[in-house]
Image (cartoon, rainbow, N blue to C red):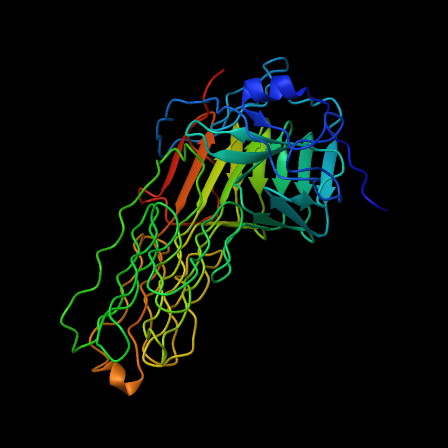
Length: 434
């Protein structure tokens, strides 16, 4: 049965006052859209309204035992979510949503979604002025046979005013040079620094001159350096500095690796999941915001391989959070050199590092598990570009994961979380009070 769109009725004046950006006429929805019909146009402009939240306190080792959801009447959520506000959004038409098939949410200009029938959508401004798309439902169940693919140019905040039960996967990861959900895509052209605040350094040198390959993108962890040919007189560029906050305020995507000659790996997406009740992820489910694999090097105008993209960001907020599946914000692998023809691997939803491209000399692996920095491309393996060869790309750095609950600690029985909770890239804290 064809999905029926139910769009919210909100005045353009109240939207601009609240920092919401409405892209459609008053009788339509705000940018993003609900149902299977694409949006009518791109978002308009509104003055950014900061929605700062004090950074939650990291409290390892506590338990959610005895925690209860907020009482009725304590606002739509009972706590103040990071990065977003639901003020001014008409929530009267939302309903329970059950997803039992593969579906897509495409954020940003020209976006659409075919996952929900009765949710409402809006684009809001974060504290730094950047935009995030918000979709609100009454409750959400993602069945084992379901899958939500998040694409598009804006980060996504998916909000449930009840429980959020995820028994299947949500993917907002990059695929090679293509970013999703607000991640930074690969730059076009050769020898260009990667896109985003942590974009990887470009390769150096020219054809038939020994040089260094491009580095991986950084986020929480730093990207690996590009491999240097053994006869090169220079050094690979230093890794780009880390960026962002442990609280993931604002919600930002991952950065792309540096370019050799054929693009690079894109940064992982940015995803925020919010529930008023219990948010749970089953053992067969995963949430992936990993980076894309870098491009291989070889004969051409510029010989060097490209860096992998960094992992993106995942922020989970609910009074009670139970995770039995996998949360992953890993970096992508660097591309192969020495006339290799293999891309670095895209990051996967587990604690296994994405391998660097092989087939010639191997690129650096992406960050994963307790290793938050991408690995360097192999150095010294190649004697001269005159052989039709090139250096190896660096792996992408780790992204960020944050879980905020009422007690400051989620229930994580058998969960796979990468980067690992022992690192500074995956932390816990408390939801902010009203």
